[in-house]
Length: 377
Image (cartoon, rainbow, N blue to C red; front, side, top):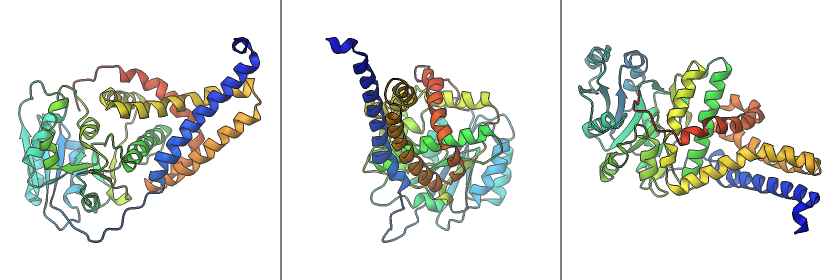
């Protein structure tokens, strides 16, 4: 047992631990994230346009609807489609705004809710009513504060329905604005997408974002809608996809024309509350997804601590070389993936973002144990 008190053994153990952490990180980058970086849309033998029902849930969102709804209503999509706006007990001018839009756009179908659903928290009841009201099999979801990045959004998103796909995951980006907070929000959005899109490509889809998400109406009802997660205020997008998506029924669409764009939060406090609320649902993911995401997060969190310890107590140049392998791999994959998601301007700060994520994990770790809030808006 003398090796336990041998300083040389402890120095070696720290370095070995560091190498194991780097190996885990390289596994995620080369086995998972490289898939998104190298992804190209499959060539289809034939093209088909499906009838689509776009669904938006809105509560006191008159200002956002006035700004964003026209971009959805004027989509260049010649096949039959409708736009359903579920007016969830709004007390602002949403009702009158929708009535005005209806005069010019016959494919706009408002659904008015005038009472709250008991025992069903969050957005799930209005969204369920929207899906129930949908005329068509393909439902395409977005939010009132989102606008399509192009007039081809519907067409590009429905392109994902091939080879038996029943779920299509899209990318919900944020507008590029001046300031550091904007870059931070966009990087966090990119980093989340890097994970859920790459895992989907690897046959392990675990979430989607309600800002840009599509699935078949039949699949929704076959799984009894949100009944299994009605007691959880959030999760109408990520938890529901975690339940229904698998390697056989899920596709992704990442073309810039298929993105949606949202206004990012303007203050740190608003952003903090938004992210904290989102992370309260992660504890309900399937065990295998929590394990894989937890291993990635924990290994990332240990990289710099073990790097510093290894450089202090081992040969400094050797752990630095090991770290360089990981950073070069990460830099190449991030650069390619950021270009795919139209976030390439974030790449010059890739080293800062890598360090920031360690701080980010520590800041939001308590949200994994916190009870979700009751409101969706």
